[in-house]
Amino acid sequence: MLFDKFQAMADFQTELSRRDVKPFGAITDEVISATEGVVQGRRVILAGTNNYLGLSYDPRCIEASQAAAAQWGTGTTGSRLANGSFAEHVALEAEMADFYGVGQAIVFSTGYAATMGMCATVAGPDDVILLDADSHSSIYSGVKLSGAEIIRYRHSSPDDLAKRLRRLGDRAGRTLVIAEGIYSMLGDVAPLQEIAAIKREYGAYLLVDEAHSMGVLGETGRGAAQAAGIEDDVDFIVGTFSKSLGAVGGFAISRHAILDTIRYCIRAYIFTASSSPSVVASVRQALRIVREEPERRERLWDNATRLYNGLRELGLPVGPAVSPVVAVEFTDREQAIAAWYQLFDSGVYVNLVVPPASPSTNFLLRNSMSAAHTPQQIDHIITAYRGLLDAGLATPKTAA
Image 1 (cartoon, rainbow, N blue to C red):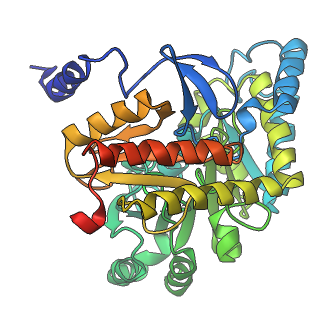
Image 2: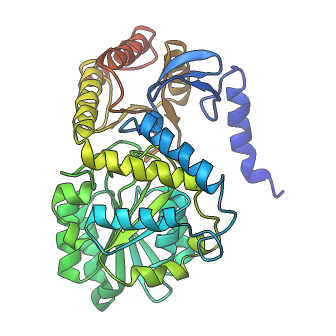
């Protein structure tokens, strides 16, 4: 039957329905601050929101959003190519281009649309796309639409990338290499210096998705490419406004003037209503804060280090290095689900990640740190994880 493919998910939802609160789609009743909320009646620390700089609740961003709604209305009711290009959209594109030190930028309604749209458009039927095996769903969705030959290279493996480019011969010059800055599940950073060197050697093109690294890495917050010192080697950068900038929307920038022509070929841009002016205004304000308050990144990394080291000292299986994304891996599904519920009961809301969303067959409790978290909140999170060990719902690596 047509619906047979959904049965496994239906069974999983039935399994979760034994409790009033579900790990997927739990309803937030009230937002108290950037790091606290009431989720289905329980006050919790929000430790899975990707609100890296804490700007979703910044009063300056809220004020800018309210003023824009009063001036421009609640929505554009059209795409950028029809009636949906407002002065605010054009101003934000100019500011994004200036932030990255390039001449071209495109603003999209969502980060998913930005990444999917660019990946579907830049390479075509006569081209090749080489993408990291652990790429985000938006990347996979986009490349499937491109018509290009799609080849995966092993996650963060420059050697495997070089081998596959070498095999392409002259076709390497028509190849788009795709990598992410920070990978969203385990928080590891791509080896962009090595990837850029290989890209130069074979004459390929490079697209970097900075969704989880824009505002987080780099001297001025431009992301992993800036931190690696290889921005001149990156042909396209895509990202989102829904993480560090605390809003919704996405962007693409390029040092190639052709980007302004490419925008008229991106179906995800052409056939989508543009972002509401209130959202664009809050993003513009958030971008100013990113530029003017680098101490927020410092606090973010202090908080990430505090949580990562605390969980590692408990012996929990965390990711390979300190990152604002701190994930704890489980091999048993029932244990992972029970652990999520106990954390929630302890006043900590994190993300439960199950295959195929996780990068392996394991299950994850995924934490994302914010500059707005206090040391006391992070210690509470660590204490809640210690409770998992006491309850036998997690196994220290040393005991494995």
